[in-house]
Length: 453
Figure (spheres, rainbow, N blue to C red):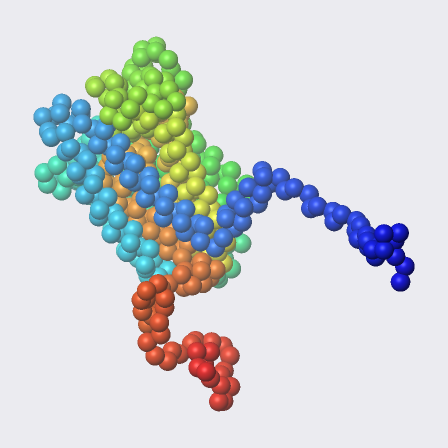
């Protein structure tokens, strides 16, 4: 063995290996996008968006109703929390309706379509009976229930049209009848025009616009050809033009679009202009909850149709954008439920409810921003009004039931159910005895459980 001059064995030098190539660093923005996309694609995303978004809108609406209605209540010699207590009671009843609707099977929803439609038509006809119907702000669309409680049957007409129209179109699709235009229009359009006629007898143009949007949503989901869609839209626009042209009040509302002064020609745009003032004075984070100035008699209907303006003044741009984000999430979840189902009734009903809530929110917020005429429709789940809140929360329960009925969501929910038969002691899980496991594999003879030795 060779040695060095010092007599020591030579030092063996380690062979250098080529350095392993490092993986490229992942872009944090791309990673965030991928994580968000995976979260959106989960089976329970629509379920959580509908449930969480609707509850957040309702709770925030209760807070803003309390803040915006105090001055109005005091001006009417009522307790400051008068309107809040009524809205809270309606929200509790609506919560029960939401829970019941979310637990009902689809077959029961379809069975309720005709009774709800018949009840809505009957109540809307009662509005026009002298001594039963009553007028509020010039619209004959209310029935007094005694005391300070009133009900607006036209709000339940929206729910009736969604359920009945979805059941009708689903049955016709199952029979292959939607390929003919007459089966697509009859009897859906005549019944919708019946509801619109009963509503317009009372002069409620805003609710009529929402019902028209629901009708077009159902026709669009049914795959109506373009010429048919344009034809029905032309008839609706012509009737709407005639109704607006023959009403000085509606013409005045139309002339207030984009107004910056309270007096615009012959029209009094006080409400529209002061809604803009409220939004403009809010800034980024608002003047503070309860610190609105416009609600002190300057802004009419501060807790109903123009509650979004008070929200912008007290919570600022951050508050209004939060409300818009919640409605956008709710609309996205509804579209996702309608697009991923194979049940035609679920698709039509989910699409109708989504069209209803989205169109009503757009019309209300557009009027507050001065981009659309003031139609007198409340902000769904947010504005004061039990007649609007109850059917809307039942419709949200429909969406929750449809989201839960998705096979992937049903499987995910079943996996999250708690396990029973275990006892925790000292941070460990102890078995109380032999346990049967539900498995697709049959246990081999003589095999022992994993806990036996």
